[in-house]
Image 1: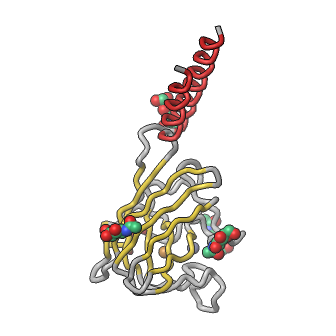
Image 2 (image 1 turned 90 degrees about the vertical axis):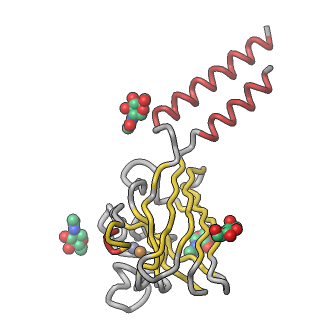
Image 3 (image 1 turned 120 degrees about the horizontal axis):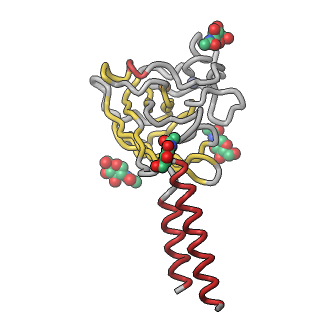
Length: 196
Ligand SMILES: *[C@@H]1O[C@H](CO)[C@@H](O)[C@H](O)[C@H]1NC(C)=O
Ligand SMILES: *[C@@H]1O[C@H](CO)[C@@H](O)[C@H](O)[C@H]1NC(C)=O
Ligand SMILES: *[C@@H]1O[C@H](CO)[C@@H](O)[C@H](O)[C@H]1NC(C)=O
Ligand SMILES: *[C@@H]1O[C@H](CO)[C@@H](O)[C@H](O)[C@H]1NC(C)=O
Ligand SMILES: [Cu+2]
Ligand SMILES: [Zn+2]
């Protein structure tokens, strides 16, 4: 009996983690498309993506501030930057919240990637839900270039594709916490029953 409660608890807690996803669609004549998932993990947000229709090589990859793609990727606004600081790489101490660096496409134009970012979030000030993901034509210079837009956009060029990030979670933070508490309680009760 006890072991079933434990299994049930792990399943419930795992499925209570916040998740979000975005479907990337091509802008205009470009071909970039695919999906990106965002999942809460211990060190931050795990980002898992599969993009196709790119030129081989590095492509700037950012969360932009506005979840509006009604006029293509142009209406997604600038990089998501709630602290109003300069552009940087994803490991830089000074960066926009939305600065996720580059993704790399192989010879077939496919970028499969997975990394954890400790700055973006699925709640609070750095919440990316409802904002846009944009993949660019050129490499993001991570703010280290000498171009006039290195410290605002990383000189990453045209917007090849984009989409609006939506939640995949059916619960919000407080529900998650109460689910966790009630499951912990269930485990304790089950353990006590077993002892008595
Ligand atoms: C990536 O997406 C393409 C196109 O939808 C699909 O054919 C391919 O299997 C996917 N690759 C992975 C590793 O998910
Ligand atoms: C953001 O920073 C720039 C450059 O320091 C400054 O000119 C601008 O007024 C700031 N904007 C806001 C909203 O604080
Ligand atoms: C960021 O740092 C991590 C951990 O040190 C490293 O694995 C990763 O390659 C770095 N990413 C970039 C884009 O520099
Ligand atoms: C989260 O859900 C709980 C329970 O449904 C609700 O009381 C609370 O207002 C919600 N919080 C937010 C921030 O939406
Ligand atoms: Cu961008
Ligand atoms: Zn930026």
